[in-house]
Image 1 (cartoon, rainbow, N blue to C red):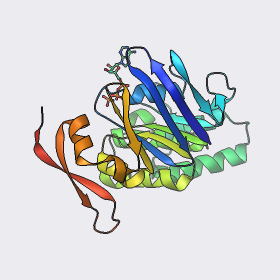
Image 2: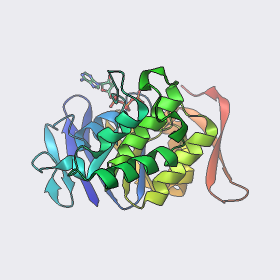
Image 3: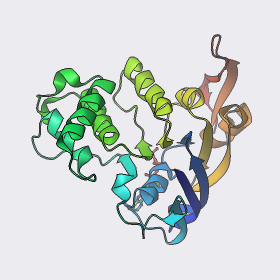
Image 4: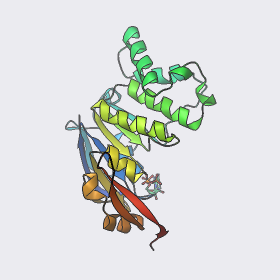
Amino acid sequence: MRVEIDQVTVRGIIEDITLHAENEVVGIVGPNGSGKSTTLRCVYRALKPAAGTVLLDGSDVHKRQHVARDLAALTQESQVEFDFTVTEVVEMGRLPHDRDPARDRRVVTEALATVDVAHLADRSFLSLSGGERQRVLIARALAQEPRVLVLDEPTNHLDIRHQLDVLGLTRELGVTVLTVLHDLNLAASYCDRLYVLDEGRLVTSGTPAEVLEPSLIAKVFHVTAHVVNHPTTGVPQLLFDQEVTP
Ligand SMILES: Nc1ncnc2c1ncn2[C@@H]1O[C@H](COP(=O)(O)OP(=O)(O)OP(=O)(O)O)[C@@H](O)[C@H]1O
């Protein structure tokens, strides 16, 4: 599915953001407070931009019906307030779809296994660790069988193995994935293209190799970076000096 964010402005926070993604993994990176989450909020309809549009396959997300059948979001606000079991939480992902008990069960079981939480199926969500909760929330998003997956820092709380698992999975899904990532090396490894935000504006976009170069890193993040190619994948990775530039 095609996602087009066109000249979106949220007053005082982001200005004139344009971003396109279609059946690829697109990363949004940038310093704290640069407007990454705000941009995503306009996509999953938590915010209506003051100007600009967000289109899903050409139709305005704010006017479209049944958006939850197409789009799932794992957000900074994704929470479970009550004491549901893990299975119940993941089953919530099926709510946008017409009921089909056999299929629903199969999809939920598969989602639990995919993010390695099947063994927690009967546990209370509120009793889980931070990383376990995060994986269950990812399972809920997968159970929604979205064509667009919006992820705000999906690797939060995850150990390195589960970070790699979850990001690898986003590539295998073959759907449009829009993800905010703080770890630039993970972004370089798993994203087809990156958009860099700074102070609410789009600075540049392109493939990780095009975008993640030392002068851009210095300008946007105020650190000195060296680019090395990963010895087995050849993907550019960054090594940082410890000093922070003013
Ligand atoms: N509802 C709001 N009212 C006022 N300011 C807001 C609101 N939402 C966000 N902001 C401000 O807008 C800026 C961008 O916030 P946003 O959460 O989009 O940044 P971010 O790039 O996702 O940051 P981080 O990396 O810290 O998660 C921040 O300075 C934030 O304090």
